Structure formats: structure tokens, C-alpha cells
Length: 346
Image (cartoon, rainbow, N blue to C red; front, side, top):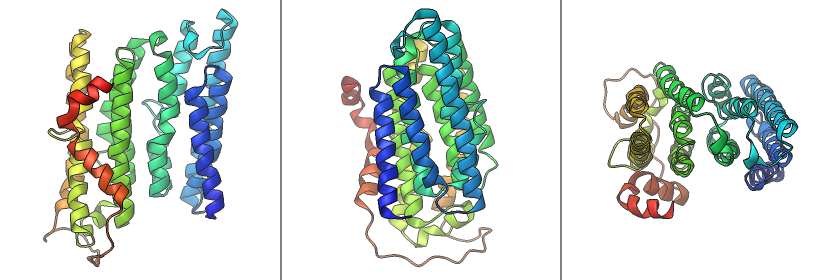
């Protein structure tokens, strides 16, 4: 794609995200969401492969439906209360419609079917944008309306997302689809706590974005898309692959890595809110996703036969690792010891 065109689309993405996050009025928030949707479509379909065009079409239709629901929700609220302010969403029906719309935008269960397909049809860099930046405006809207939302509905969506995100990722061999189901599972953790402690949801999202960025950029460097090629990628950049192993374990939420921090805090908060059942269920359901993270980690670490792959081993590259990947990997692995400092900031 033309560099100038790419620059325009990326700038539009930043602009749309900023408009939605900083707006007080529902129409401005909706405008930002629409700018975002239109800016990402060329980045999804830039390869002109039929699967990429299909992914862009699915993404457009889903996001258009979700945006229409956001407008409908805000208009219903304005009709009953006379308020267009985002924080003044008080009508119960409007709250339910908005929760459904945001769940559709994010890819929470049961509105998750589009996300793995779209991610599979997109390049790795666009997949990274879809998994991180594109999730920020809907989460910001949830954050602003969190006092009005229905806790029972969000808890149900969260537990279903964690369960299905783990369960449906078990049988996948395409890494982008595995990361899509991983994203659905993590969104479950964010959704369950948004009503009780919205700042914790944001902390979880920021850490998830950093860990996912590390994995996507590493895979983009080694040009790996499937489990079978991941098994032979260690010869290309052994040190980078070792870091990828640790990043995957961090995304799985294993101590003493960064990914353990948000899960630990969320379980602690749920326990404080007398939600012992939810605090027990959600880590147990996350064990499903632990399995495919460990499977990915095993494929990353496998260096000797026997393994069932017909791929040739790749040549080792002397190209130095990108500084961005180095910084993101450090954050992904080593943030847990400074948890008290992070909590004072949050």
C-alpha cells in the first residue's frame, strides 16, 4: 500500500479513537467510532486476497450494526431523559441496548463470531491494531457509562466469553485465530470487573495490549502464521523465540510474569464484592485458554525432532531485534515486582 495512504488511515484511526475517548456527547462518540471503522477497512483488505475482502465485509457489517445500536440506545435515552451526555445514561432499556452494542463492537460472546474470521483474514500488523487500538473506544464508552450498566448481564457475558474463548481456541492451528480467541477470553476478564472497579478494567486492557503487541510484532518479525511454521522458527532468531515463549506464558497469566497482575487484582476485587462464585468460575474457565497458550509455548520451544512438520528450517538472520519489541518484551515479562507502584498510579 502507498505510504501516504497508510499514513492517512493510521492518522484517521488515531483521530477516531481520540474523538470517542474525549467526547461527552453521544453523537461525537458515534462519529469517532465511524471514523475508526472506515479507516481500518482498507488496512484489512489491502492484500486483495478473497479472504481479506471477506474479512473487511464481515467487519463492516458487524460494526455498522453495532454503531446503529449505539445511536438507537442514545436516542432512546435522550427521548426519556432529555440527556445526550454519555455519563447520564440512566434509562434501563438504553443500558441493555448499549451493552449489547459494545459487546458486538468488542467481540464478546455471543457477538464474537466475526472476530476470529476477521483476524484470520487480516495481516499481522492490522490484526494487532484490531486487537488493541480498535478495542479502546468501546472500552472507554463502557468505562464512562459503568455506573449505569447491568452487573448481572455483564457478568454473564464475561463468564461466557472466558469459557468460549478458551474452548474454541483449543482446536485451532492458525495462530491469528488462537490470538482472536485469546482476546475474547481476556475481554471476559475486563467485562466482569467494569461495574465494580472500572480502573482495573483499564489496567487490564493496557497490560493486555502490551502483551499482545509483543506477540504480534514478534510473529511479524519471524513471519509465522501457523503452528507448523512456529515449530521451525527457532533457527531464524533463537533469542527472540525464547522471549516469545515467556510472552506467551505472561499472556496466559502465569506468575511471576506481568500477565498475572491483572488476574490477581480482578479475583481480589470480585472476592471483596462477595462474588465468590464468579471469582472461582472465571479462573477455572481460563484454564482452557492456558492449554492453548502452553501449546503455543511448546511449539515455540521445540528445537529437536521428532515433530510432525514438513517445513524446512529457516536461515538464521543477523538482523538486530527491533527496539520496540525489546521494550515491549521487557514490560511483558518483568512488571509484576513493581505492582505496588502501578497500583498507586491507578
